[in-house]
Length: 201
Image (cartoon, rainbow, N blue to C red; front, side, top):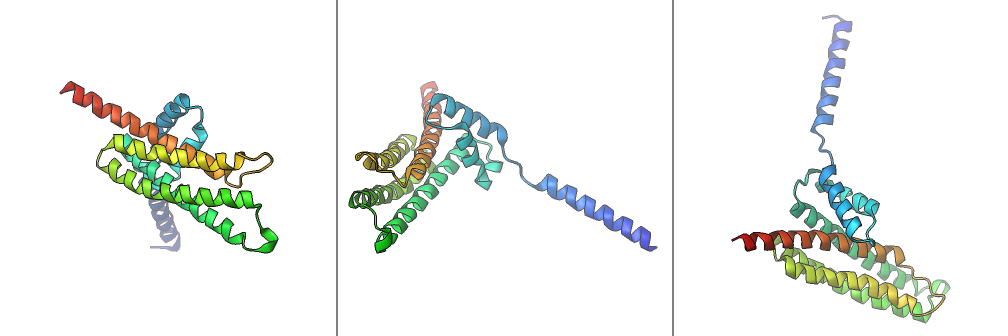
């Protein structure tokens, strides 16, 4: 076999392997995610369609999720990650506050401490909510995740109690709110679906 034949064989192998890797790579389940986000954003003006799409597609597991149940669990886990990350961020802000050059106004410091408390509580609540969700106790899960929405608004409202104060957590609170709303919408859909099944029995 000559050098040209060997080169041609090598090129064919590379092309075949490349084609296989493209075909084997899971693609996002666009239809389920897009339809879900369309329904959510149309029923809740506080939830951005783009935010919903970007958030759900950011989790690799959503690429192969074919049911609303799986998508719901992904949304709650994204919420948990956001709440955990926000809590860490608040702790870092309070830690930096010990530096005399970067000291916050006492009012802002108090607000941050309050936010740390509500986000710490939210972490434990989401953990329990995931257990309820996996056990299909959607009503109980709904109650728990509703309190997480309250945590984000409570945190943000604290800063708004004084004129001229800018919350350093506005984006994070808004993300928490939207992720909670996405999860709650899916949970309500699943809960209604189960109630319809029970009514048919």
